[in-house]
Image (tube, rainbow, N blue to C red; front, side, top):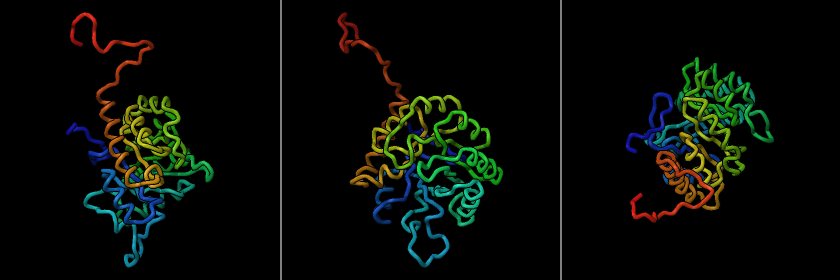
Length: 258
């Protein structure tokens, strides 16, 4: 397991849990949750942080840049042009050239606009960004994003903030068979078992925010998610037993050792 890394672009990470920074009660709680999660990648919404006035308190003041890789995201962007501008702004502000690309198609569902997402991906890849696009659980679109140069694909498990867990594991499995880039489940994780299921399917990582920040005890949930992602990864690598309709005795009757 010492060599089991999550590889995104030209970077390697030991932790396969990526955490968001919104919805916490305070910046201090955000900082503590990050530490307990064991995450190495922290996503921040470019539009929701102060990157212009260094005299004012900012979320970035609570994130150790030597310890965490900042993953700026284009949350709240509804057009390809808007998302592209936001990604450029994050890079110019010194956040990162790796970007979680979101182009939202509906305020009600927060489902992605996949046509605009693909358009923005192509532009940002040409500009040297490491693009991690948030998409729906569509294997066809996942392949198109890979072909466009995306460094990973991030299919939703369920609508953003819903906590419904992995609603369509079969599509996730097809995506895993369709693309060669890392597959990171993004959105919908509500508790530790949801994260473990995603990892047991063979996903390369899980990104979450509300599942931790919205819990009754966010710090405890951050720690739970840390172990869940790790356990799910180990279980996937170990290979589960075959499911059977009838029982199989754990202790053989013929005296042999299984």
